[in-house]
Image (cartoon, rainbow, N blue to C red):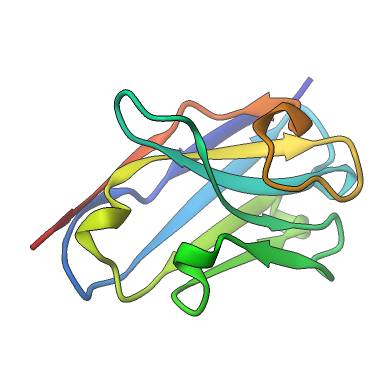
Length: 124
């Protein structure tokens, strides 16, 4: 029903910024809460941020609070993750996810659709 495609990843130096985008198709973006997760090889998928259907509610992992901002433009069917003050520890594949439930949290099982991921590498 819903296809998600992430973009905007790349290589940056520590302290730099990137903006990730998640473009949705095959559905109405406003019907879904959207989240960002990240994963390193051999590790569990880690919650990063979530935004509600209308953008009125956001939550963040403690590790990214004050540095990352999730936002959405439902007219463009796009969700963003602005990442500032990047650290080498932020090096992961970042995934966009959509949830039918109104207010999912940080558990990946609460999300119904997933993108293929985009690599973010932060050099020291």
